[in-house]
Image (cartoon, one colour):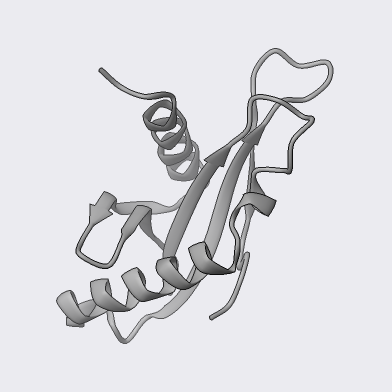
Length: 119
């Protein structure tokens, strides 16, 4: 059975493909952590975190990525690059795709934050 998170990751991957990105890998897991989506955007290798919020009263989906989570994402990306040296020459970027409820909308539209944080 797929979780709600899986649904949003699938929706994000599809939406990112529509935006011209090439999805390289999804749900990459290793001993260091997990990366939701790894993609190519022209000359960039992009590590993408997908976040969703169902209630507007809590912190935004993007705000839920704290310093500890960012550090884990960076460490996991470094591990990924060590395992895939053919991609290590590419410039890297960390993006976030969020899904948040809007007051008048019934569907959660994605928001793409390019270069959401740096190491």
